Length: 507
Image 1 (tube, helix red, strand yellow):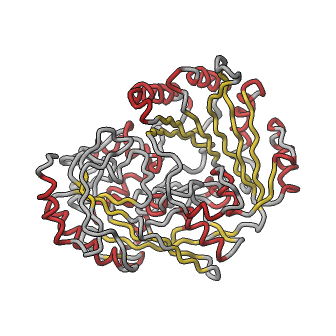
Image 2 (image 1 turned 135 degrees about the horizontal axis):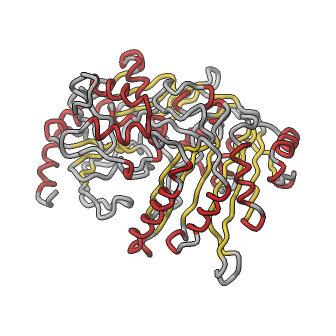
């Protein structure tokens, strides 16, 4: 996109803007993984009352369609591939950073959450109303609710209660014709699709009404760390059998990263951190873990009784006595990142983990880690087709492989990414198959992309689509074809339309 075209795009869209609306017209950055905003147009900083998106967005949709400009919606900016604010074609960002109200009804145990509200704000507002209400969404407080809920959304409560999207009971969306729809007016098919199928494919999500869940006034957290020399490999292997099957009130996450075990860094080992939340007190937790998972060596001194809100801070490494930190939407880490995910249905042998540790000794693995997230419990009870998110019964756990780098070693990005993809290839025989499942909220463009500059192929989209949604993919395509037949709302991994339904892969 040339420098000269920016003003012309500006002229197309400016008449459609509300006086207080902020418009960003962007060009592709040098690095997809850390976008650089090249062109910025500032009518005025976004401000106003709650009705502003209902006033501002429909005219913008009309103008964008006429001008052939794509729309991207950003609620928290946490998309793993930056798809909410980076692409290779002209586009406009609708940023919901100011549309962030949370209204909690403690008596009805519900809340309305605007798309730009962060999870930290949601949790804080719930706790203001009641210490015994919570919501089963993610642990990271800076994630935006709009994108998180639309992709499923898991957290430390999902073994007990399921996903965030499982608890969405109403929504507001602006469709391709600029209409503002709720659950009744959008219909059950579209309402189904935006609870786990990625809302950006179907319209612009304004907010969700959610059903809150009960938690005890006191919960227990613990963290136990083990190195390879302390039998970390054997304990992780055993964790695979315990964590998905233990009492669903208990969530034990494992993060594994390399550490230097001597001062000069000559010897590298791996350290596994077993971090847990239990919906109950220490006196109930200790005998449960000591009997079911004695290999972990949990003792009372490892455990702390706190509130559920404080547990969010605990998982983030924040001081638990400063809950206001959850209201800060500023990212604690600013740099480059790449993540990939797998679902595990059979326990991985010890020797495979030992092979993974060998890969971590390579220079390009210095700032990488693996996170193991247990499933089971309520996740086993909800049908795969209940919402588009299909990773339910039979899933032992999810694995996230991640690597980080900064401007200081940006020249090594290709090598770092190559290492991560090599690790992903190494685990291929030991994870889910046909398809090799993936998680839409851990977006990974390596697994396939649409043609974002022309006609989108159903066959091509099926490559990545079935990894994210399995058999739910075709229902998502049918919904998309009905509500957005010309495929206006699109991105590199948006649900495609399908013009012909012959039973063959016709497009």
